[in-house]
Amino acid sequence: MGEPDPPPRRVSVHQALGGGFVADLLLWRRWGGGVIVLASATSLWFLFERAGYNLLSFASNVLLLLVVILFLWAKSASLLNRPLPPLPDLEICEESVGKFAELMREAANYVLSFAHDITIGRNLKVFLEVACGLWVLSCIGSLVNFLTLAYIGVLLALSVPYIYERYQDHINPKLCVANRVIQTQCRNIDNVLKKMPLPSNKEKKIQ
Image: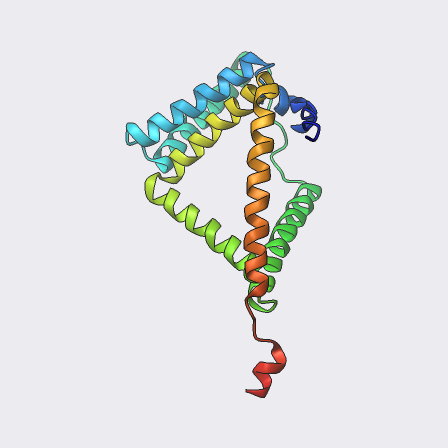
């Protein structure tokens, strides 16, 4: 009999999440921030999903209230010789635009690389992965709308990392077993796909 597999190494969830403010928030090390995010997400979901509030009217009312408050603050400050509202410079710097454009370029190239592998490269494995992923998204979209899906994502983000950090020693062995099963199935599917003949460019030209 072989020796049993060594226990999975315990990882730092805080470091895996970046080790900053966001990691503290998701792991509930900043209780105040976690409560604010959860309460805000729940309130917005209730307003738009249950109360039937419209996103455009909600944003307009919030901006209208903000503009009225700032206008009255500025008028009263000029009359009472008080300081004006502490507003920052409302402008977008060139560096932020460049970073955003770079992120969009990388995302577009990543999507185009997948399209290249599916169409020109005729990568059947990538095609099946993309098709299955889109089919799963379509099934999820038929069950819940985007707002509910986003709210579920917030709930999972605030619960899964915290639960995993606390019960990591119990969860890791089960994840290892599931990973081995998935890897075995992926290898079997890959072997089947390799046996399927795909027409080459030369064969297409001859035809």
